[in-house]
Length: 432
Image (cartoon, rainbow, N blue to C red):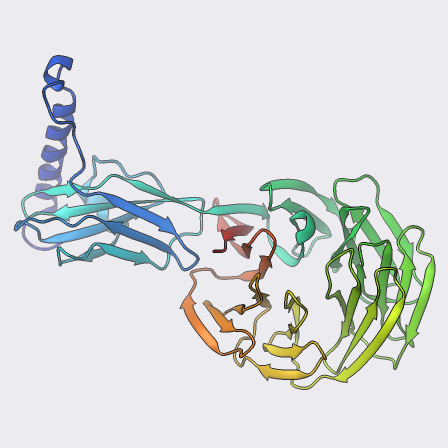
């Protein structure tokens, strides 16, 4: 911290200063009643943002000023600081007295981080109070490889890496709803709504078996189809939609109660079809069947009557996203990891080059697209898809980026060391 004095002298001087402050506060009641209450020479404010933590403090207006020291710790910072220990928690320093802010771009993504500012007056220090910055960060399991969000009931499903275990997290109430065995280590997940309740569909490529897990309900339903299952979704009105692979049957529509077949649609044999609903549960249903070569749209009314089918060839595709980003109005989608943007007629519009990420989400209004890639959080304008903003986000191993449009929440899901062990963590960030 400079060559003016030794570390021991710093420690002695700081200790003397703080001891005098505490002696003043310890005066008798009669004496204290005649004294001005102790106040910190430096006031301090700090708050969390998606980019990091913003720290601001009051300026020291004195000719003795030499430097500000910004301290950060995962443990609360005492006023009785040991100068010899500051090297591990001092994250910034400033030699100008009118510098009164600092943006911490690399804070730990943990529930609480503490900040304090020291003012170096040459022969002594003055201090700010310690301020805690809190984040809504919750561990959900020991490492996740697949995620599904069901925003109608604020439910996040996370499959444990290399295990047939699925954990369930209610991000609205910040509550762990437990876990269950999906029985298949390579299981795929999708979600839907039935009888007003979230349910999870668990299946595996090149297998005809489907397992349905009701959230908050009892019992697991299992059904075996005639063909291998490629994707599953529902309309919230009692109908189940299942796509198949390596067969002429492209899509099947079934009664959710009893799995009675209603209708089927055929097409050329292709594998690796992803199936998803592009409309909210309980409304007219718009389905998307897509792979790296072809995309098909199916439309049904609220009663489940078939309306139309549209087929387009896909150009410029790469690997699938594990979570396909869909515009709130269904106008656009980002189904591939290279950032290929498609419009509602399934035409390819542009490729957001260099994204290479499964982490895409549209803002609640649909005016922005968020992408996380290579430690950068990028914001694109919609519908021009021009880059508006990009900043480094100190989060590695992000496996999911979700937006809940109704509750205006951004969910970051990432694998990290948390509480000294490898875990999947969800951070809940309110959107403006």
